[in-house]
Amino acid sequence: MSETTSTAIDISFIKHFEADIHTAYQQQGSKLKNTVRSKNNIRGASTTFQVIGKMAATTKTRNAQITPSNVTHEPVECTLTDYYAGEWIDSLDELKTGHDERTALATAGAYALGRKTDELIINALNKATQIVGTSSEGLTKERILEAFTLLNNNDVPDDGERYALVGPAQWNQLLSIEEFSSANYVGEAYPMLTGSESRKWMGIVWIMHTGLPSSSSSHTCFIYHRSAVGHASGQDIKTDITWHGDYAAHFVSNMMSQGACLIDPKGVVKMDVADTPAASA
Image (cartoon, rainbow, N blue to C red; front, side, top):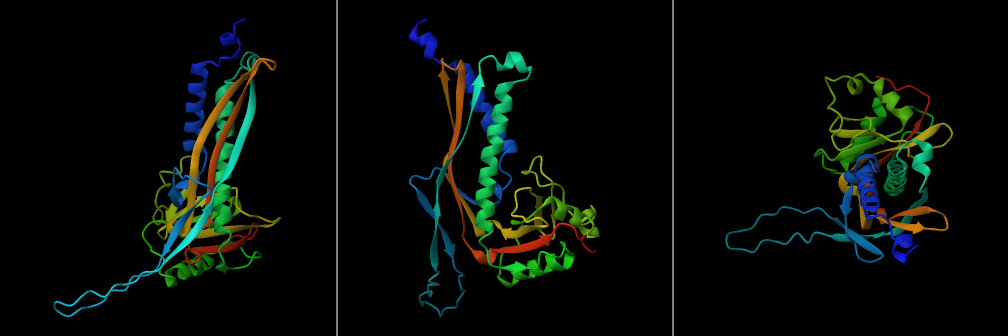
């Protein structure tokens, strides 16, 4: 067998696999990437996001200079880390299993990378210091209004870019609140969250997420503004496929370089919420 025949990888196989995993990652991977500030194509081990202070409006007399606001800029460093997800694809697997092994593995890899992206963002959110409630209480309307008030007191913009993450039990608790469950009060599922439980209520996009910090009987939930958290990508998903003749299989390695950071703690409120108590209306 010639070297070309024994070592070359089917170009069509590679192109289709790469297309599958990119599509799966975009559609079924990260739920949260588009809910935070994002920077792509970072060169280097880290990047910075700026916390921009408040600008004050002033007056001036005729022909006088405008007084500069001297807005503060505080850089927040975001470190990038490399992540990998790899697996073998036996050349005869599809004959034995009766399903599309390539697509199944591409979807599994995309899920793994998507979960890692969300984990980075959630870890950044979890560094916030504003906390309401205790883990012995359910997610009540009163607690939500308390968090809502904290954001308003901090002048966090109410501009349609506020988000809330809750666990499955907390989602069920929300459904017992009439205003949340009724179509008269809430908007439709958020369009960019395909395949996710989501709806808009009180100007906040509510998202059900299974990857939140938890104990045996509670979850840590979050309400935050898009500008409060940053996500950086040095390398979006890259796929390397290598044929190993001694294994009669391709090894598929998916990789990415990403990081996330808390930019403005005032824009995030944590809610420690019990899983069992039902919410009150």
